[in-house]
Length: 222
Image: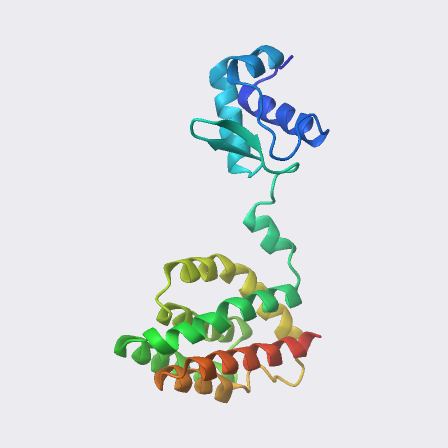
């Protein structure tokens, strides 16, 4: 019986416990609301709220006209938790996947406004790389990389990169502490090469240069 408040959270945790114990298998349909409400000693509205919570945590899936089905035994980790746990190498590998494709797309979709943004952000990055504190330099570097993402004109890639930025920022600051010879600050040419390939509408070259640059960055910490 579920007695403690809030009932919906308690109901969700009880359902999750029973799913994790194997009472319902992957792909199996849960009993109806009335049945579950009787089993847990709560109202049907509480069951509906508990199901919504577990659907949001990607454990259950509501299929209109069919019912509620088990799609995972455990709740998926929140994206912010995943990012917090990622180490520097994982962050750089994630950037490789996102930014390589973004550079490829940008080379076919960039606009005159995008090219102007490249010029501004590259100039700011060059200036910051010479003598600015690490945090200022990181912001200037990220501004250029975001300009590449934006030039791809893919809202999903932009949103994904923006959610990634806080973890990228921390990873870069940590990486700069390991980069005693300041290789990252001295790679302005690599960034200009990416921008040049995008400007010249050469998607494969743009992707290759983005991959080469980020692989070089990864080598600093490997």
